Structures are given as structure tokens and as C-alpha cells.
Length: 165
Image (tube, rainbow, N blue to C red; front, side):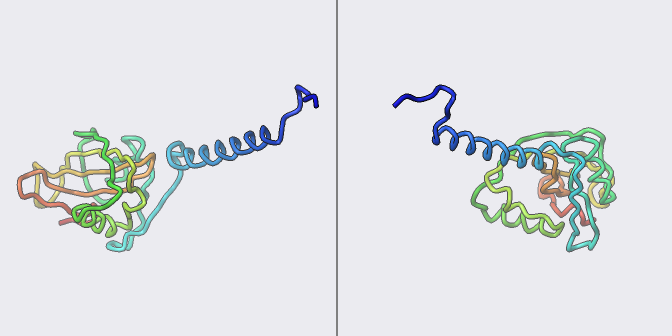
């Protein structure tokens, strides 16, 4: 039996269809998570009962706008940028930090095992801590997935970004 050179076997068609499906799904996920900077993603905080926009984490301007939603004033440039990995299994410390994020309507469990970029800004208007207060933003793609206010002083504090003390 002779095969025609232009004829694609059933197996060949299956491979082409599978690759098309995989590429389509991957590109949709990539576009939604990393490329669409104007996508609005508002959440309502259970603590403040206000809506906040968590998109815009990809740019410094977007991160500054996010921080300003809560009335905080920070230096225009981050003092630190670091990649962190959220553990697949939460330790008690991560569970407590996630509880802090849930006050803002966020949940880090979705990001277990993923890499986030932490942007740390010097905070200029904290009522109790003037010199050592910082704002940490954890970003995945274009979305801010966690945020806190803390003191880097020994025996410092940490609280949700939506709380004032």
C-alpha cells in the first residue's frame, strides 16, 4: 500500500489538534495573567466594605495608585524588589499572613507554589511609626495578590494595608 505524500495520517491530525488546543489554552491564561494591564479587578474588603482595584501591579505607577487607595503615602520608588515563592503547604506563619490578607478580601491559597514579586516601599505617613514603616505589595503578573503595612524595627508590627493601626 502506497502512502500519498500530501496525505496526513489520523495520528498526525490528532497531534495537530492537540497542539492547537494546548497553545490556545496557554495563550488565554498568559494573556489574562500577564499581558492585560487595563483589566479591572475590583474586590470588596470585608473590613472596610469598600471596593479596591487590585490590577496595575505590573507598573510602578499602578502600584503607587494601589497604595494611595488606602490613604498611604510612600516614596515614589521601591526600596526593595524580591522574588518570593509561596509554599505549597502553608506553615502557621503563612496561615496567619493569609488570614491578614483575607481582611482585605484576598486569599493566597490560590498562589501556592507560585512565584510572586514583592515590592517594598518606604511609608511616610504611618501614625505610629515614622521612620521604619514599610508597605509590601506581592504581585503576580499584573495583579496585586497581597499587601501589608509593617515595621522593620525589632519587635515591629504588621497589619493589613486597609487598616490604619
